[in-house]
Length: 170
Image 1 (spheres, one colour):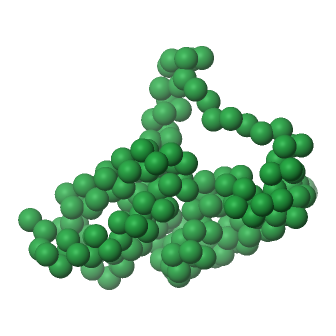
Image 2 (cartoon, rainbow, N blue to C red; image 1 turned 180 degrees about the horizontal axis):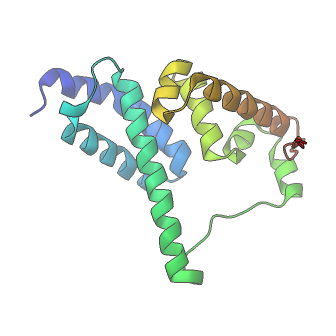
């Protein structure tokens, strides 16, 4: 059974978790479900938590993994159901340029992975090492992904969405 201190710690994290879930799910009800599932999983696995990791990074990691699991599960069901499942709307590039005049709209146009990195580092103030622990990747990978996310956001904000240039290796 959680102690009152744990309850207080989790309660203080609820607004941050909900904000992050809203950016991922883009739906208030789905975000609430995601936060509830995160708290439920955190409480059920509290004993397995490593004390050296911060609670914030651990909860964001749980939430992000639940979101990814839900997306994978949804894509499997979509394959089974076929055309009955609703797909997320895609924007033609002309509309994308028009919407990019607003930085918030540009931020919403970023892929969930890039939005997650920008939220964790810029909004939530997590260190690169904490984000690397969440994603279970090296810190250099986090730094390069964050650089690409910032570049993409800058390009969208300027109304210049470009596909990434690829290097050919010989």
